[in-house]
Amino acid sequence: MNKDFQANKAAYGRLFQAAEAVLPNAYAPFSHFQVGAALLTEEGKVFTGVNVENSSYGGTICAERTACVKALSEGYRNFEAIAIASSGGTAFPCGICRQFLYEFAPDLIVILGEDIGHLMKYTLKELLPEGFKL
Image 1 (cartoon, one colour):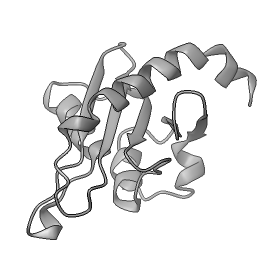
Image 2: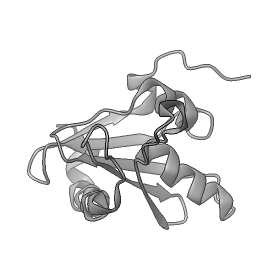
Image 3: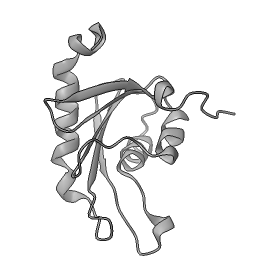
Image 4: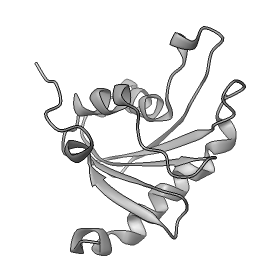
């Protein structure tokens, strides 16, 4: 683990716990794979989101995008970190979520893991090198 992770471990842990706390709100009747996300703005506000599946599979939205859309709809555009928790162990953001988040915060810190005791930190650029941007 790098120094930045150690210095912010408690804050990242709280963000991960916020993602875990919303897991029961996920609507996942098809996959039974619940995902929760907690997005931290540069102003210190946290927006949570869950995955919401749909009978029309293309209508499904991931937890990461739910949290981001909530923040955007409230006027926030600058994001520092996102934590992702799931009912099935470590869950990395899907490709669509990586690109969606990259639009707003290519340097976003991504926190994920199996549980609070086993967290990992990445940057979005590590997870999506050479992301698309107009």
